[in-house]
Image (spheres, rainbow, N blue to C red):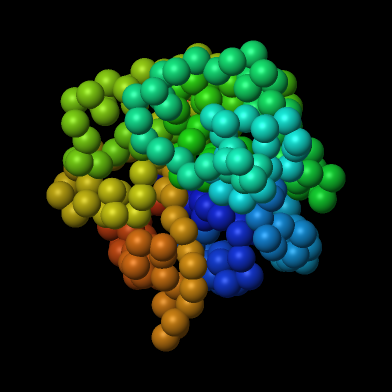
Length: 261
């Protein structure tokens, strides 16, 4: 089984960056995704090069935190407040399905390209992408993101989570349709996506062996020899448990991946 383990939020803060690099150092990460408008973006780029990780860094598209890189989207009430800062993500049906205006489409595409180009200007090729708070899984915004990534030759975009037992029928249908769209666009790099706890639960219960999987984590700090996740779990312990449950586990990266699904 091939597994990608990705840490989100690289470039958001020095504490997070430290935790991510520490997770790489113990072999519990294969990639990370960087925030182009993050407060420690430039330092994170430098550290990625110093650690020779530049080919393992993707883009963490940010459309709901901080100041955008481009001017037009700052004037869009759909994405930004009256001060030009991104609005926090809200989970609502209008947000999911309300079409974008022509101006919003242009502004959104320009912002995404600016985030891509800033990374590449700092020597990051970008083999894959995901997004802050999973905004790319909103079908209207996500479809535009897919098109921009194709134009910019970014090969893979993260699935919406499709393993775990806590999903309603409606969510399962939505996720199936979204992931099918991702496949049709040629941007699907793995068969499944979830978190450490999802994978551990499957294998503790003798569940089916999966094909290729991306596991998401959010290292935020290191204490008492443990690397802690945003949700409070120990990534160190979770990785060790997963390795014991799946001795045939083969860690890989999106840079080494072919299309799936």
